[in-house]
Image (tube, rainbow, N blue to C red; front, side):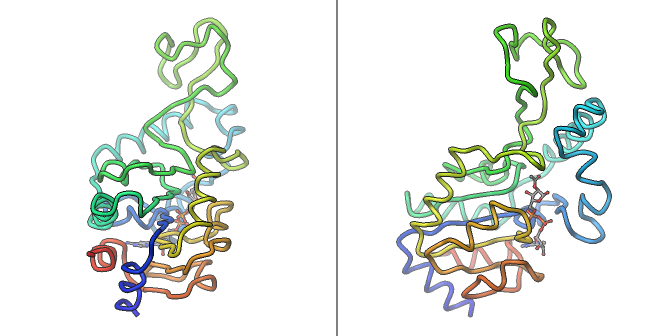
Length: 238
Ligand code: OAD
């Protein structure tokens, strides 16, 4: 099947990659739903990854994200990220990367135009709609920084449960899913919508790359049981 998928890659005029936490697992970044090491095995999403949680305890949530940011500064893109970026560089305009990951590793590997549907953990934004007084360069405090005038807080630039995805990125991801002839679904459990829905609405063939079962296996034309860093360099070596 691996050989057939490689042929599909060669034939496809446009390819979309939909990646999830498993894409970065071999860089040493924990996934969310792994039963032992996953972040959601240790923490409850509703305590950390919702606007309500942040308003209830901004210091605790800010510090949790700060510790994740610090760990992410120590990791590097893996062979899977690099194979994707190298393919894009050899074939400009032929591959769109859509990611649920907030770790910035696709971008650091050299991928251009990454559609980061769940934001980027390295960035912050205002919690409430900023007023004229809200200047990110003139905040006070650090966990979290606040506007000294109105008290508006900076918060991690990620999408939390119950929040909308960035509309421009989502629209572009939907267009790429519609237009592609092949979608590589790499390292996602396929449990979180609307991202997972892209694999169900694409007009192209769907290939799942995942060492374990995923909720998108039933939508796939081929399921490759292996890891991102093992399989992508082989599949994308054209
Ligand atoms: P999950 O933790 O739900 O799933 C990770 C998937 O990666 C699983 O299916 C694993 O089998 C697979 N996997 C593990 N190691 C792998 C490897 N080396 N190569 C390939 N696959 C591997 O993570 P996501 O599907 O990304 O949302 O989770 C989706 C969203 O839920 C996240 O973006 C996050 C989370 O709550 C927000 O933060 C909004």
